[in-house]
Image (cartoon, rainbow, N blue to C red):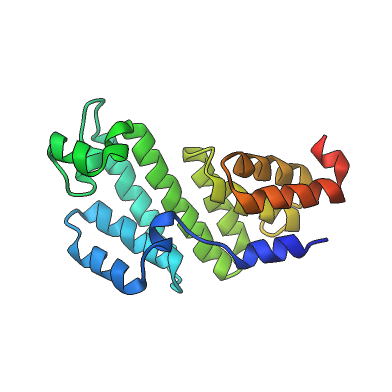
Length: 200
């Protein structure tokens, strides 16, 4: 009955940016980026998305993002400057979805992604307790983060790095499934078949 969890663990992935590029592409982005915070976020994504083992790169990215976010005001363009775009019209044309977000939304998503990537790195080293702490931090900044909720649900199912708790597995898998995470939905179906009382 635990096969679905094993498959889930074998298919962990990081944020979508990493999925779409090769290591060579990402190294080029890192070398060309013109803001220290952006560079550190990309380094964190590389660490989380490929076979690297330094979660401190991701927590460093979080620290830099927090500093940057505190400089933001309601009408600031810091979220655009993160990508090296400082003019309002250029930002609207080049990255409209980013421009439409508030500063808080933008930075919370980025902070959450960096904590999530740190969790991935800890998991690879089987330091599950530290990984759980990172997933919880990711969810603190972005409660609907599908991957962080999914991975935390897996940890609660297995009792790795945290006490086994199928009710919390159900809670976090449900959040992930509502965001369209297909593996989370399959995991929920299996969990509810295995332990119907958990899903009531």
